[in-house]
Image (tube, rainbow, N blue to C red):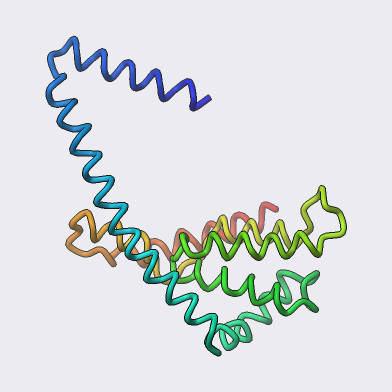
Length: 184
């Protein structure tokens, strides 16, 4: 559906720009937007590399083990099928920690790794296990304490207070998690 809607929007926009005499501003905005997109990508890449590196260093130290132990009671309740598999518990906790820190870009490969490990343990390969479903819901809700990516975007766009988003993000992620878990 979107494959049909977006080309229509683009054609209508270009047609309107041509017939209203705004082709020059349209061209200028296209190149300005492209430049802004590249600048934003580079700034986000730096943030993503920093936090991905910190997660890798943390993984090599006892910090992840301590945080995993802290999250273990929650993980055991949410993922009862994975109680005996410490490696999967560690992968799940690393993903949860990355999400809690607002590191969606670092959380994605960690989540894929955890999901792959859970699939290997899954008896029915063509059906998601309960643990896999809960994991998907947690990742969708993405409960965050520090929304690092959003702060980085707001900072790169010149926000006077990029961290002012923290409290609303807390409310939104808790509401999303409660709603998703109560509807499933």
